[in-house]
Length: 630
Image (cartoon, rainbow, N blue to C red; front, side, top):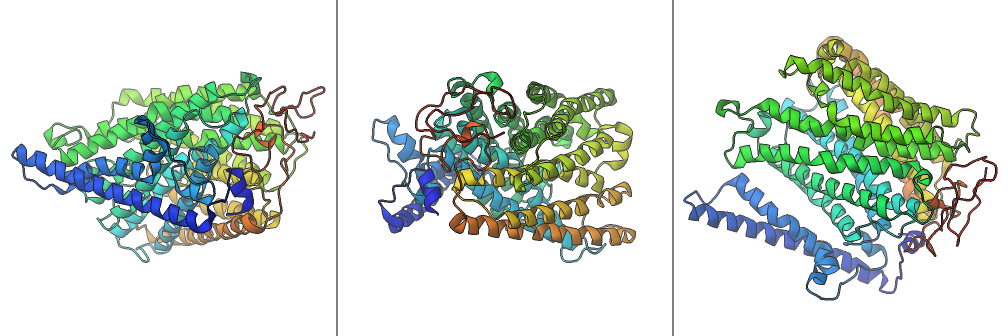
């Protein structure tokens, strides 16, 4: 860890690296030990209850569930929730995390530390899931499968999809939401710092559960977990269920924290019309996470009860309705798409305005579009079910609502174009990724029209057309924004500048590799090639070879990124406090920021995007004012 990053989070360094290393290792070991004790206690309590009630004392999946219910709080308390929170409940003195790099491995309350924890975790998970994508494309070099059995392919595909969805949900919001939101609002931290720390430390058990599912047979339902398959396959499915329920809890708590921070923690003078667009996007996203995520958790709890408690929510032979799961699942999972992309839109519009030196075009309309998406996102779910057996009278209404939600999305796209029109474009790496996102999301939006219309969706449902469209929406629309944000805020987070040439190599390899991978993928989809299937007809082999080769180039594009980020962290040029000469508050303090973010509480006197506006006041903290630049 560099001195700059340590300074960003109040590193005193007095304990020394040896002490900190032992502290971090001991904390992790104690978390695992407490989790193991909690798991054993949960299993034992279930056995006692089953014996008392006349049931067999052992049930594998029920015991796993009971054990996990106590293992999860054991993990949290062992990792530091007791020292940093629980001790206060009984009037004892709180024990704080170390002040240097060890706090990244502890229950730390600093929003900047938590943001870095999220960012490092989900960049790693993104690269990990990308390796599974490479295996999938290797398999599809041959019509009959190159390296995996059908069952193995299903498990690999399910792991890839699930981890990538997790990255999409929390990669941007968890990292930049935690790090940047309080800085942009002029706050010293999130509204609930300890709840924020708990939200992050719920994530490692999710990863452990997903990895533990593999030796238990994995799960072959993809990330959707449709019954009846999800109620009858191996124990790996149960591990998936517990992982996603836990991840949902983290998302709900984060959403609540973002909302309260946005409403109650703004600096003096930060009126509604002066709030940066990225903060607005997080606010709208947080409402979706708070209101809808519980539906996914409920659907998986119902699946789990069917497996371990003998209920029949989705067992048709006992009066259950498998189609009910799809309604509950998609009632969350389509709004979840906007959990992915709303913060991405916010990042892109931030960068386009700052690096075009122009006011954000149609600022108020963009904010209205965010809330238009929030309002409409809950009434479009059934367009994912056009080919199911739901009541045919629902088809046309959901076709209409799906088309309607394209209006606020289109407003955001037009705002991006209006912002760069006749701007003085500074084509550095963040700007390249922002422009790439605009291009990619256009293709995702246009191809989505075909899937929103009932006649074409019937033909294209569950084909590689859907795979291509989904990747253009999520990878092209969000992951490009994630990397744009990494490059844009890297100087703020680390106090270092990255290598511009390596960053541009990363962009061009990723942009070209991505488009040459997924544009050709629309063609086999139109020809009827099914997604999630390990085999295809021989006449589609040539196009699949092209797609796979381009996918390998896409995978290789992240090598210069990893090298650039790690090398620059230790040897990069020292960053100025405001290298982009931007107006928003996060750039009006040092890079990295001090522990309390600002030397004194900031006073906001101008708009965040008033570039070239005659007489515009500086949007800055009074104790530090970097050159805003026009």
